[in-house]
Each structure stands twice: as C-alpha cells, then as structure tokens.
Image (cartoon, rainbow, N blue to C red; front, side, top):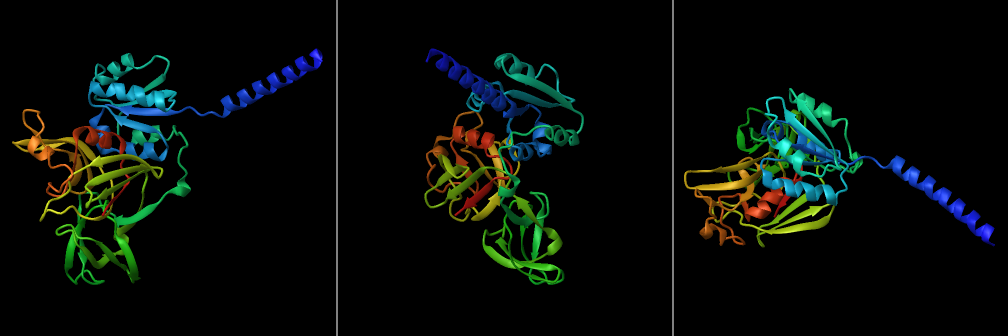
Length: 332
C-alpha cells in the first residue's frame, strides 16, 4: 500500500511539473509602456497603438504619478517596464527618478527614438494579446484631422452650397444612402449642435475603429459621466455640461488628443481631453493662484459650462490618464 502511495505521488508530482512547465512556457510577458516626452505623447499614436495591443500606457509629467504606476504594475502583474523617450530628452529627467523608485524586481528597457516613425516600429515588438481585432467596432467619420473644419453640402454636388460644418474625425457621420460619388448623411452641425442631413463626397468618409476597451456615456439630464470597461461600469463621475445657450453637443464622438491645461488671465482648467474640436472633458475651473474656484465647483451636478464637460480635479486626472484615444463617447 505504501509503495502504491509513493508511486502515485511520484506520478502526480511528475505531471504537476509538466503542467507548471507548460503554463510557464505559454505565459507571455506583460508590459507597461511609459514616456516622459510630451512631443511623443502628442504627435504620435502611441496611446491608441498601445491600447490596440492590450498594453497599458502612461504619459508621466510629474513625480507624483510614480505611486500610481507602482500600483498599476502590482495590480496588473506587469513583468517589464518599457520607457520610450526622445533623443532630445536630458538623461537626468524623470526616467531616472522612476527607475530609482520602482521595484528592482521589474525588468526594464529604455529606448530613445530619433523620429516619430520609430515609435510605431518599436511598439510592433510588443503585445499583451488582450484584444481581438475581430471584436473591433467602428463608426463613420470625416477623413480629416480632428481639428480640421469640413463643410457639408446641401445636395450631391459641390456647387450646391453648404449647410454647415463639422470638425475632423471625432464626430459620427451616419450614412443614409449613396448617390453616385456622394453619401447622403446625418450628423451634428458644429455651430448650433443640431442634427442635420446633407451630402459628403464618398472619398471624404472613412470608417474609424473604436480602438479602446473604454466606453464613455454622458447623461445630460442627470449630469453624470459613466465609464465602462469591457461593458463593466468602472466609474461614475458628477459633471457640469453646457448651460443654456451653450449646450453640449449630443451624439456619438471619439476621444481625441489631450493636454495638461488651458486657461486665460483669470482661470486655469486641467487635464483636457478632446471629443469635438473645442468641446473637451476637463477639470473644474481654478484661480490663477492655484486654488479651486469655489463658485464654479459648487455648480457640479448642474449645467454650467460653455459646452465642455467639467469634472472634479481628481476625476479629470483619472479620465486623462485612463480614457485612451479612440474610445467611444455617447452624449445623450
């Protein structure tokens, strides 16, 4: 009986080792990509390309973010950190600080790129295989840059005059029918935020993939932003949309580029993320001395902006860091 027990134990142990070996062999290394280069972040598709490959990406612009990166690495079982920086960046920048403050157990690579094309070439080496291309959803948009104005024709003729304009490749253009070299379309006119029907040449329409696992829904009536990740409600954020005469446009849009701040001589807003040219997600207003504008802050939960969507500073920072370019936004 004892012999049989040891024999079975040996067999079980043998297959455990085989299983463990096979599991280790199949496990792929998981990466996080970081950059401290504002130029790389703004002038390449690094955000979108990382999301397509299932790679977590973060743009680092201050030391306070390092703790967040450590948490992300732990929670996502990251094996390697990849730093991408421009050739012009000083070697004494944040990358060295990051390297000193994140666990030495994590492998790391540092890559310096000399032109923007190198970023895509570099990203082609990595993937976390978290996303299937077949699952990609797409909507039709104008085949222009996100800040380029584009006019809509009254008829299927370029000499017919125009009925208004939209901006770039962030606003959905619904195709109704094709008439020779034109599509009859429905879209949201930028000037007055009304739904209009007009005509656009076929060559100026493109199908754009929603290259993000995030989905953002803004409910104007409730003044709430709901953020979903793989159809799971991840976060609810109180907001302020456009007040009377400055309505926030309704419809479907795509998240575009972003920036740290904007403002005037009297105020500053932080963490802006574009969804329709000058319509942005961003923080509440701050005074020039760095304090929050209490008068505007108390308006959260009610329409108060000139059409943008305001959030508390902490939520705007989370939105800025997590909602990647290419995510779908539905405003209703």
